Length: 475
Image (tube, rainbow, N blue to C red; front, side, top):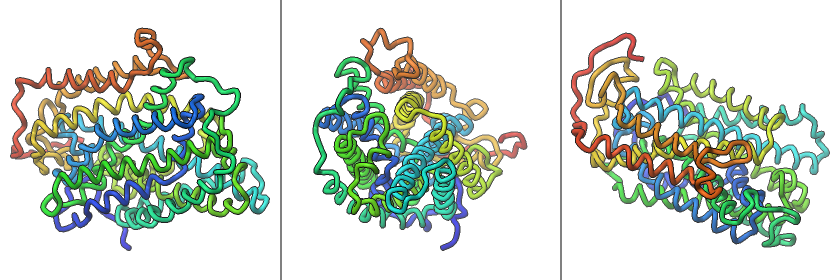
């Protein structure tokens, strides 16, 4: 299979051979990994029992899916990735906001996936063959997983799609067997001695809904276009693509997360998940758990790394996708080591997802509103102005920036950051919200109000670009 050469340029229709079923496969198969499973542990670590944890995960996932799924339709129309597509609403230079958000989201989740998967691999090998659990072992295992992930990401979309199809069936079977393996010790009560992280039930429940449930779909706000750009709107309707996205996100996220909640309660995982998961596994399941930890991590991190390569390619047009992927692979590996040797798992994860959700949500809201305002009509050539080092076109606005969209994003992000509440950081608005983290709701609401208010009298960009002219410093 040849290495994919295409970066964030427009995909020709003859190459857009995927369909809605492929979209479901990639969203399901890529998410059946311990890096997603661990989010089911978060509500338990916050002090919630089984049913409160389940309801927080379901509510957050459904809310996030309703916001995120329409983004899949954008790249269906533009035939390029979402950060580049957002140039229609933010400007061909302003779309760098989406590229940076996507890069940070994917970087963090890639590191998290390799970190959790690597910890489980080391634990399984220690119990199976007595492998030492020193720093050298972790270093080698992380490097091996990162290397395999980089290879998959460099080869590109077609290889990752094939891998996702296999994982969709294989990982589902492994998780179902896992329910049997841990069923004997399962309890619906929170681990003994645990207290609500934020002091009260509803504050903690909402924190879980945002940080564990909502964060799952939000992680895909810049990723969905990586897949739907290979689906042709001539052969597949937007309705089918939308509902396939919803199905893939809801099932692909809830299945592993609910497995994480189930197993966290079964093994009494409080401050850590991977260690108790391995220690509490029956010996006969260790081999299967090892397979799930390694294969699932490579599949999930591979897609995240692939997206990171595209985002860096979008930021640095002169870089090839392959070279950009190698660079972000190295960065994510460094973060893996930092996560293992220097960070507290629960605090780092919670702060990371809440802060990025606060700045990513308003970008997604503006992009979705922009899609409906232009009725899904985009000028694909005008979107590529920045990548080609030229000027002009329908989306040039002011020096490549759409100021109203940028202001709306900044206002929504600021409001969200001021309402974030974690053990590491508390926003200034938290006392005014009764100690409840309203960062997602506030950031989305502010962006949804400010963006239309600033653009009500503004003419909609036409899908016919003005002739672009060469300009050496455009990039």
